[in-house]
Length: 325
Ligand code: SAM
Image (tube, rainbow, N blue to C red; front, top):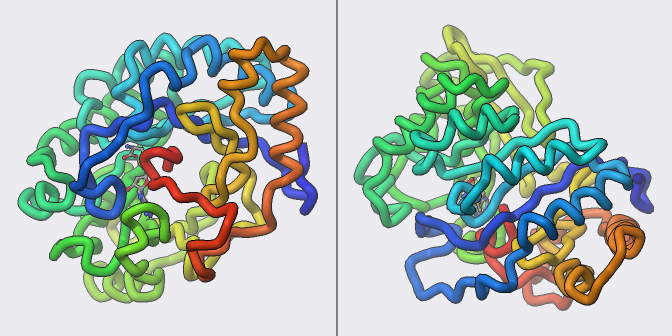
């Protein structure tokens, strides 16, 4: 289905839980968190009902996210059920990687085609300071488990914000030198704790990478999303940039989001327009879900408003973990 600006909406990001086993400074932070009550999370059956309705409107690709999606019990079985829905062609997920060593193979067998692993530093102490967990070794094990499991692509997401830690984000590109992974740098967005960290623009990172590794050459690779990719001399993989602040890509945005508690969000930065959990639990039919989803697609805003006053009405108050990043 197309939205009012002619954009084809074919991609749904589904948050499976708001819970996370990390406390990244720019995301959940280290303060107290109020998790969603368990009973407000969409069940597997409810998720399948929503995805069936969405698929009838042209959604063909799903990204499973969170919180940390690997914390959701029975994830491989849920993936199998989602794949059985007519119209669903591709399911990928994004994870912090801590639970991948034991789950990568099962997820690949269930049909997950690709994984994004969030990793912001290769320095053990910086990782622990940033995330609140001494887990770098586990994530690197998870990365290798993902590479062995046979996903068609493994990407690393590195958030680049000023002063997140004393880490050097350019170092993370090292992973793409020796492995077939695509390392993508994502600018911090002013959501949740991310408001406290100004984004590091693409140009500054590119300069640093070029000084370290040699010229970056644009390549024509495209995934589901807005990343722009470059090859690097002697690298097995690629580096990429997702720059929602310095190079917004809203004109080509193809996505809708579903929060773990059932809100449909037509844009990351805007509040949800309708709660499908409430509709489902009041007995809504597939047609009613489709009508609610179509209305959400029609109301998709032209673009985000990261540059404006974040206190405006209608804008998202929750952080990335609750929204589903
Ligand atoms: N736990 C999973 C993971 O680590 O990929 C999925 C959820 S996490 C919220 C998804 C991505 O959002 C991660 O790569 C994280 O680094 C990123 N993220 C969180 N807050 C952000 C912010 N304010 N700006 C940009 N990216 C952010």
